[in-house]
Image (cartoon, rainbow, N blue to C red; front, top):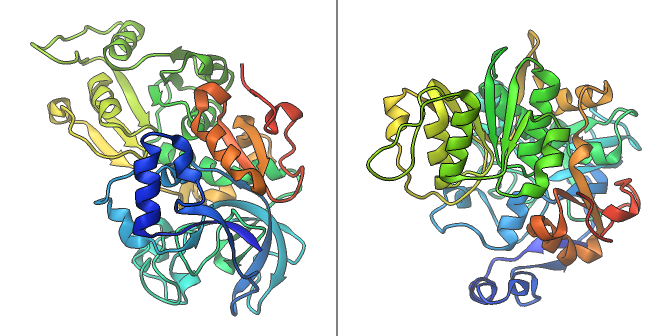
Length: 425
């Protein structure tokens, strides 16, 4: 079968990296690392494993960054990857066949694949993190029956969602309720990531929070705060003015289409806060917002974040970007909390402990949230180059979340979102 894979080699990397600086098409050229590969059709590789026929797979921002080689060589996460691998980790499909010991789903049932390749999938006894319900912090990403890899789409021995079929361990299967569409199911992973970030520092009633970046994770954060924390005021910020109606429609009380100094001054105006001007550089506030959820992760957005937070406020870093220096004096001056959020895990919610995937499925089935509101485009796997171009060109293509349809029509998007033109205002 054909699957979209990433092949690591110095000549392929050099072609895409050097050529991409002059022509973006080099990143998806046949001479580059990414392409449709002929791979064996998987069956259940052993007890506890099942095969899933993929219906819809989401194109994550990290997938776009991987295709465009947007990262530094010293990124620690390269230690928990192996090549070649099939890409894609936001997956929903139908259980096709189950090996002995598969009990979380039945043959023919729709499922979502939790992507993290933690101890159970590797045939190991649970490590301390897995026992604690934190497979995103598993100690065994380089051990056990599989090659190094954090999750589906990063491991040469495990499949990925950009293929017609993949093998999934029983511990990774979550049945999809009938009330949840395929498009909603395909967005369970990014929605659970945003929910995890939100629950890393939940806002209190009456708080004002700032969500920086209105890509998929940022807009899902806005939506989750609006639906789950209705007594919290949500400010959304992004440099693209065309996203304002989307952010407002998902629950933002105000949209700030600016960055840097202009964003700090806009927050100050909204909060009636004094703007403190240093001898040089950006201003800062003491009467700022209570929480900042940064889904961009650039040094420039981090610097703005620590400057607009109130003393002892919290900044949650969700975005993935190459680290750079920023002026962090406000971090210690205001005694701020800076925390990261990665993936999803078992969450504390309404007095219980529940897996983030199950929580998103339950909330979606109950009509409390709708992750698919940000789905704008869908493409068949054969048009993967077009899909990635649209995902990368958010301003020109008016894209938010791009999906790959392995089962024709499964995403359920209207014609305007099926590669035929802009889907947003």
